[in-house]
Length: 639
Image 1 (cartoon, helix red, strand yellow):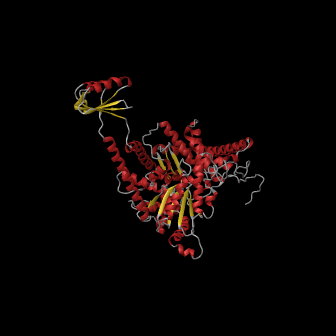
Image 2 (cartoon, rainbow, N blue to C red):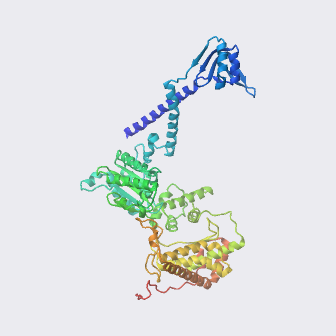
Image 3 (cartoon, rainbow, N blue to C red):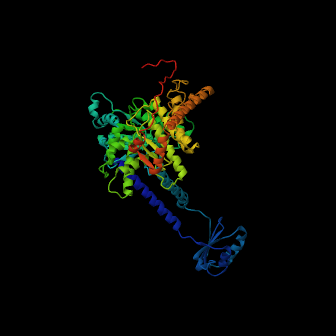
């Protein structure tokens, strides 16, 4: 590291010296005194007068330089002096040459006259050529350095890896596994990696090889970067961070050069950890695109593969990569010997969310009634980043209201802000829109409460928030990792509840149900094309899901169906949506009195919470059980 520091220091000194030399040469070159240029008529008049001491005629340039006994003065139109010098020069055309020569020959000047054939010195000629070039190189260096974010390597440092080191003064990251929660299984896997980095001899004596790469994959915000830093902090080794997009440039070969530089620099300080975030930017499967951009990506990936496979067992450099899209990575990158470990980092469960909230709650003053367990229950599917944002929003709200502590109200509002956006207090709806919104949300709530497989309704509001005029919130009682057919059918009926309530009450539905229809249609389409929950289509996957755009070279064209099959799919989707609409209509008709009571209460209070809602739902007539369904109607039903 001392050699690297000295090298950087020497480069800085070199560029400072070069810059000073350029500045001094520029000052000397441009500060050399030069005669003032005057008009030809004034020059001829001076030649004919008595104030000229000497004359120098320059051949080819048609120039005459005059040394005067007194300063030649000429005023500008504004009144100031344009020329005030005893050394002047003027130019003439070929037709005037004989007349000027005749005047000079006939006059007698005190210091005489001379004729010159221009011959610049070699030094001056080189300087006039090199100085602009040096200035251009200096400007290019500054611009290139700025475009590279100040990376090292001089003006040609475009091939240097733009990685950042955490603790560049020799320290290691202060992150530990104790500061990362909600990913117990991932931490257990990484603890072994930590031991590899901290005590390699312990494993080598059994013939074990240190893993060369670890791939962390999962949704955004689940803590992949924190885990990588925690490994480095626990193992007490240097930690380097770089993004996959930092390798890619418009010039083919630059990315490969940066990869070589990355591995060379990290090997010099081994044992160390290199974290490549968004590795799919450089590790996407090869051969799926065209043009120079794909060539650059392919060359960069090839260099990554070569460098990782070329590691020697004693190098002790670990590559940790993170991605949200593991399915698009090149298979060669995922094979053993490169990324030996592939660890899933998913959204935390209930206990994990509570542990994350406790970590982010440190240093924040909470009221005694705050229960982080209840906050964790209200936030299923939230990642660590979402939960941190919830507590930060709550702290900001408490500070804005000038409160001493963060209370339950601030936490409830923070959850709503993260889920649906800030409340739009400036939007004032008229009475008709408010009434329409109240019945719409009451319809959602009644259908959700009447079904057997929906989650409990915990909040209804008609206050505009984000893009919604109001919303109905349901909260699962437990974490769920798969969904049944009946649950999906209930979700579609729940989505249709608002639209049906508008049809029943006003006989004139509004555009407010557009998002509900979109959600219901998406559920129905997935049931038919992905989940095999249609008797007519059967248990067949007939359409790509959102992650199938590129998986190992498989394109969405492989899922194209005939017109007849597409029509059948459309009919099955419409059938499911019609069934959901019918079920919602029956529930609303049977519970019209509850609908009116709930809507009127919403118009009065604007927001209703779970305890109040449970009182309204007591007289509710529930939806009956659906008949048992089989993917093939001829199959026997067994108990």
